[in-house]
Length: 126
Image (cartoon, rainbow, N blue to C red; front, side):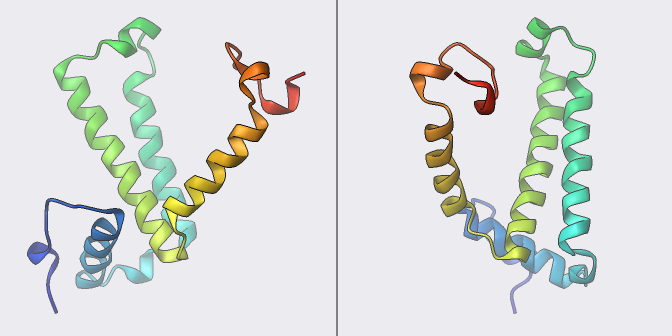
């Protein structure tokens, strides 16, 4: 069996990353902790850590981050992404297929002629 350190670091696909995460968890006997409930909570915590970086910034400041802030944002975004991928793997959800279905639904819910220039929820578009 390969170890997580033997796997490629230049990931070429979501499958590569999920295989790495699966091996990483297995080697540490963490699968028992990776129930969907726990992964969803970990994902929310990491998203909160990402939000914390922006919490008190003015809108324009959030568009022009310092190098240190960008580094923090990058790390937290990676945490969110990795937990999402791990959760999808555990639940056997194909995120690419789910994303395709969701974009089709979004196109239907938010037609350009009704949604352009508005941040209104689809249920309130008229």
